[in-house]
Each structure stands twice: as C-alpha cells, then as structure tokens.
Image (cartoon, helix red, strand yellow):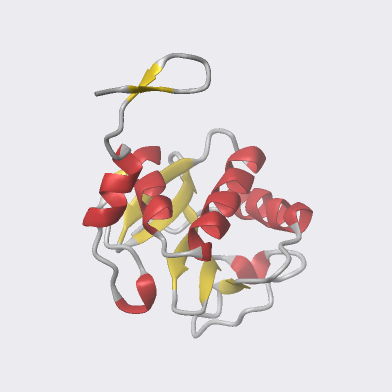
Length: 156
C-alpha cells in the first residue's frame, strides 16, 4: 500500500529505479560499473548511480560541472566508461572508476593550460585522479572542460 510523504501525496514503498539499477549492475575490476554501451544522459546517470560508495557522489559532481560548463554536452557510455563530447566533433573526455580513485581522462589534455597533472602512456592524454578526500578546483576543472571541448575530439 502506498504511503504518504510530507506533503500528503502518495509514494510507493517499492525501491526506486536507481536502487534497482544499482543492485543489477555488475562491478568490474576496481568497482567500475558494467553498463551497456549506449548514447545519452540516461546510461551515464545509470553508471554514476552504480559507482560504489563515495565515488558516486564524485562522479555526479563532475558530471554536473561538465554540464554547467557545456549545457549541450554529448554523453554516452562506451567501454564501461562515461564519455563526454561535442556533436560532430568527437569525444574530449571520459571517466573511469578504480579501487582508490576516479580517473578523469582528457584525451587531448597535453594541449590544456595548465596541463592536468596525471601523465599517460599516450603523449596527448592527461589525467586527473580524484581520491576520496580530494578538493576539486571546480573553476579549473570547468576551464579544462571548456578548453577540451573547443579542440577536435577523439573519434573511435
């Protein structure tokens, strides 16, 4: 039987869609959610919801900053990672969960000013690793997002 919430409207006692999704999602190595390959915001949100523990809040915060910097950003989940891009211009960044941190990859990050600190085997890619208690410089992160989005992106 539905219960009433604080404003008197009925609410269901059934688990939310996000809670159901979280239970069904397989976590791969390091806790990376296995989400089916798909374009759009919905699969990215499913990925963010399924990120384990504190990483989900970090992922959602980064996603919100990306959208704030680029309201028309293109989103998809491919290779078990959310990707962000510009329509017709390819992907400029992605996110991936590891055991102790969330890795943000700027695919052409070596061209960003200043460059993100994390080096890559690829000369073009730079990383930002976000650990549980790290402070995120939101202004710098959004500057990187805007810079990265203005460059030609990666097209698989």
